[in-house]
Image 1 (cartoon, rainbow, N blue to C red):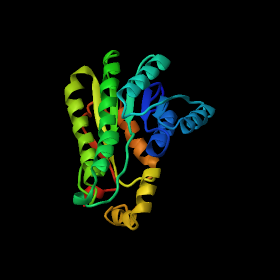
Image 2: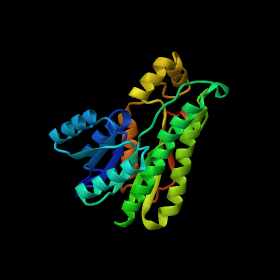
Image 3: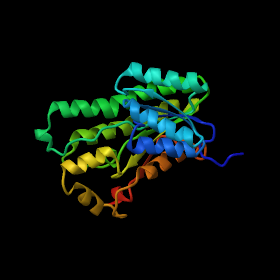
Image 4: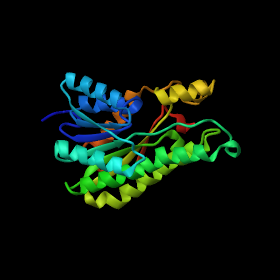
Length: 254
């Protein structure tokens, strides 16, 4: 019997072309999963799938805009038609936001963040759960944020969107626990990615401020978040559902 966390599991990963999503593809594949990568940037997806296959992993990709329900439906159908089932999903796609006081924040910022961070999870949960119900269950992890558990300055729409991800996680966990589907979330602290690099670049001093409030005093690597998601998706924690796991170096304890 394999000791890999995700041995032979079929896992769909959204936002898989960079950052935590790309790290998850590598970590999940190392843990024995068959990975289906979904994102909008086909060139990056193709390169990552080629990299994984070169290392002996079973991987495929499907170009997907997770804010569009039909795209998500097609991605789930692709996973099922390619591998016969969908065991697990990591709903990772998301967007950061500008640091602007609430009374100066434009409606367009709010609308975009809600669409990318919340509607995407809503779309994914519905189609993933429907597929998992046909095979007797599965496991889902949503990517929220420490901003889904506490407030940070001048980021109200982002905070609201990540709190909504926590709400959807708990609602789905409660509704489908009796049908063999576990739904949990990770809540990363500051994590190295293109999104945070852009955010920090536009907000000088932000990374230092956040790290100064983090007991471990540093920014996380994306592989550290992916490792937590892999454990939550695995069969090692069968009685764990509706939980939000902070992967934040102790940030929310402050």
